[in-house]
Amino acid sequence: MNDVMPFGTKTNQWKCFYFLGLVMIFPWLVQAQCPNNPVLTPTAWGAGAGSAVYSNGQYTIVGKGDFSAEQNFENGYADLMTLTGNGQFIAEVLSISGRRNSNAAAGIFIRGQTDAGPDGGLLWIDGSRSDFYQFDARINDGPLTQIESVSCSLPFWLRIQNSGNVLYPAVSTNGNTWTLLPALDMRNDNEFSAGSTLACGLFVWSGSVSQPTTAVFGNVCVNNSFTPYPTFTPDVTSTPTATKTRTPNLTLTPTRLTTATPSYTFTPTLTIMPSHTFSPTPFLSPTPTVSPTPTPTPPPGAKVWPNPFTPQLPTNNVTRFPLPSSHGSGHLLIADLKRRRVRSSDFSPGMEVQWDGKDDGGNVVASGVYLYLLETDGTVRRGTVTVMR
Image (cartoon, rainbow, N blue to C red; front, side):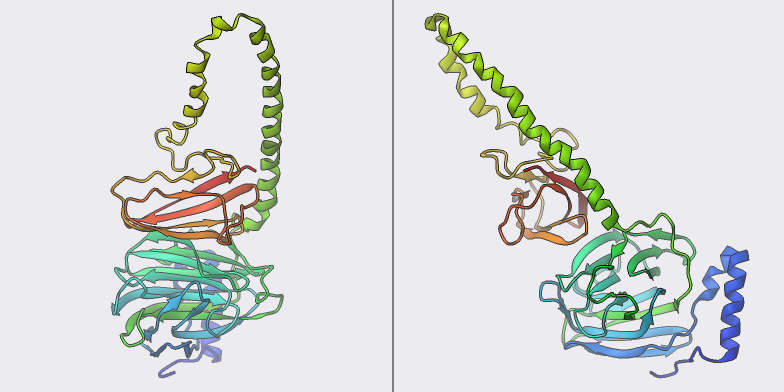
């Protein structure tokens, strides 16, 4: 790389330790830790191409290439370095120019390997308008799955920390006060075993193999010493809790059927009475078949209805996501509590959005709580939905 200042001299090392000491006393000096001029290696991913130049404390990366979430590869350009054990990578995205369509992006990553399609996390700024950031993850060679997407404006700070093979992404407007995003548990991933050498750095996608996107990064910082926030709890620890708390709910379903059974024992009692006194009964019999019809109508403010729902029921066996009748096209993503994709589908303008409780393979999912992410008309809706079998 051109004009890169190594961070290996005794003078630079002394300055770094000095600043780290001052940060403990003066929190406003945290920004002084960056940049520490890390030595990054320009690398093309897949069919991508481009260039990377360091000058006056800033990295300018020109990248060409698209990406595919489903096929587990990305084509782009990156500046990267290796990271062994705990560590963090920080960068401020200053500008994005050149090609800026919906597939253009510029950001940072911590991943298991240096080739295309490795497991790990990517935190980037969307290149089409540069007005929102997105955190995506890949686990055990699965598809690239969106975890978080929120509006922002440049310049904007991005950070990913690795502590015990749990990734902690965060964003900031000033490099001092950080907004913490959902943690990504990689402890059971085959590329994040103890002592693994990980890849971290900057990357650019343009969404085109011929037209480049240019991103300028400042305040690039990488180090192996930081204190994770104690409030960060990997989502995997909540999974058994959620399962246990939902189990009693499942046992209630047969209980209600049992308690309803005695109500039918009174039916013979009615037949003992003169049948003519119950002549209106045929007019009432259609009522039970009509009564389920209004149930899908959500109460005011409901985001998902019904919730919970049971896929095996003859009626009301889907849950609906109420949207305005004039909504545009969009995408629905269902994931489990480990943030692994369960179902992904696109929908057309004005189409009723619903989920039948099945995964991408057409199998009914297990009982439990699932995460949903609904994106349409530039708005992202997220929440939980419960399946009761």
